[in-house]
Image 1 (cartoon, rainbow, N blue to C red):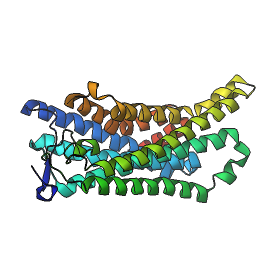
Image 2 (image 1 turned 180 degrees about the horizontal axis):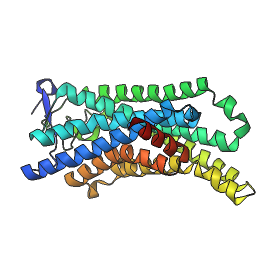
Image 3 (image 1 turned 90 degrees about the horizontal axis):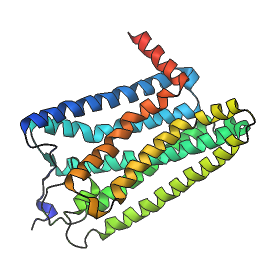
Image 4 (image 1 turned 120 degrees about the vertical axis):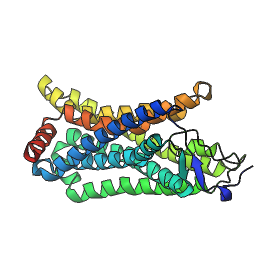
Length: 307
């Protein structure tokens, strides 16, 4: 029996046992991380430097890229280092910091996606009031609310998780410090306080999900009322990237946390964790830039000017 007061480090799940596979995972994770940094970094720089992109939609996209950059930087660098040096250890406080930052960025992203749904709703359903309802001050307040709510979630989850006594050793069955895996190390029935915080977060997330769904119901109604087909396609095309990002984020996250125990296994949990922690930050820049000519032009101008 191990008490949490005696734990100074945790042992994370290794991607592979053989040295050759560990090095292969090192290079694969490094390429993925650099792709995420490059993609999100280009979007952040292009939006910040191009005054034509200083609009509410791109302001929120800049915040989304900052969150994606922080999210990948929370989990991947440690996994890359562990694969390179053939180690599994992470310090107790390093694990706590990882939990805090991961919850912070994931929660902030979902809240920001909710704000971005509101932005698309106003742009399409109430275009004449767009400048009034989404002025610079309102945009800053909504973005700050998303970031602040993420901080509150992170504080509650981190405090409740690491106040639980640990009696099941220090081996975490995941490649980063994930709350469900940490709770498996808890003493029996001592994790109920964290379950309460999880229920609260689930209720807030469900409320955000309902808001996004209702926003798109109104958006679809407004788009279908546009008389010309070209106008309908043009209006709806501004929503497609956000809708794709929300669908990707929700589908992977739902499968990760709501899958039945009968289909759960360490290898499957590892794959799913990689999907929901790595894929959205890497794919979001591609999704937004593929169908957005203004953003592609700004990124191209930035790259041409640099080289």
